[in-house]
Image (cartoon, rainbow, N blue to C red):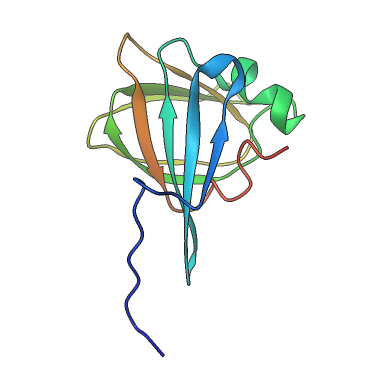
Length: 120
């Protein structure tokens, strides 16, 4: 049995586009589960560009991610909020909204929450 795996986001196993062309989720699979790269374009907001796909009132995915570039703000259903930027490790429990801050795309690698994210 092989102990090494190589995957590339340059040729992901699956791509899920967001509404209005505001970005996409690229997934690669590993023996330990899916890993995703979210590319969120300026103007992207979960409640506008993923909610129609997910059909939930707020994002119900738990996230453990690394922000490669850009900035994203996350607001929990209870009002707690935080902004994350380049080189930040972020976690977010289910029950939140999020949006891109600024004019630069936000790119996030996520090891936990993207397996079912933006999946019809």
